[in-house]
Image (cartoon, one colour):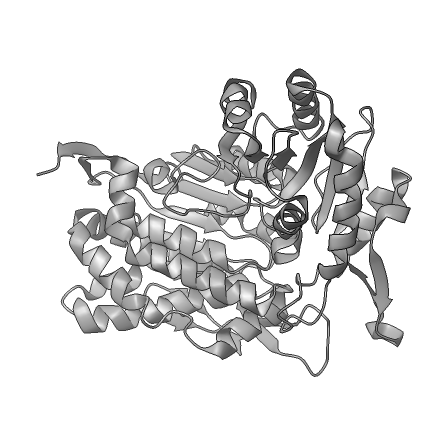
Length: 464
């Protein structure tokens, strides 16, 4: 598999090529050859997107919807797509397939999504500007998330995927599906084939100056530290119209004494939330608070249940996926520094050069005064609380320790009264009642915002 660049409606090879292997570093596994963009490729992409923006801003929104809907007929539809993406990222095949299908269903409801974003008003994007999207390391979902909302905002877009392969594969799969859809339902609007560019750039440090354009939108993903560095770098070169940064997100769950759900079943629900996609989702539960009256009993149940949440082959239906080796090393070192290594559920697999540590779902009990931490893997910190006031104090401390203003999602497994009484005291973008943190709805704001709204520079008209 070769990933070319896509610039101004044309596929372009690169003089520099990198071959990426799968997450297990197997010589016999799948490979993706990434063609890197040159200095002048980047310049050409900026110029091309700049030229096409005025056409994009004037197009009827119905045409965008029609092309998007038809494109979903061709976007990542083969089993081999799901398997390749799983083996390149470490995500379970079942998760990869389900996530792609869910995202495609969201695209098929693009008209309803726009109504959710803008209410009963129509936003006319006559003054919109282009967008540059910087996709995260080895993830496939964000490509569709960014490209689709950019197009719906009538913003031509340059995508810079991670050079490791999965995000680039998804981006180019969308380009192929988009172009085919244009031929079938909008062949008089061939300029639409130029509203997306995909650039494989190995070292962003050498490309920032070229990619920095005054009054453009920028979208980026990564750890909180990474996105802060990106924002600082962009602003050192230009005055952007907007920078939309999606950080790692800290999600929390609470099991109160008023909970009426069976604890055994609830343990599966919560550990699934901890473990979903290797625990690598921003909505995975990072910290679990349990009322002191249930703590000892529920801790024992969790330890028993976790035996069923293991890193196995990506194609095994029981697997939680495979945490990348660098993340495994980081987790083990961080836990060792806390003196909590005996709580990590891991083993070594393989032989010789292929030998590596594999981390399974793990539960780290913390005292009130021990600091919490967000880990890039299937790890949950477990805390005991005495009452609501004590719970809110612990949550506030954990947010501060992780340099967060709000948690991304907070799930309360409790009575309705406990839930209602807690709403005003919990700082979270989304608070759920008796539903796990990891069940996402793409029709709702993510990290408190609608990307499409943030990308839009609009004139508001009343809907008919």
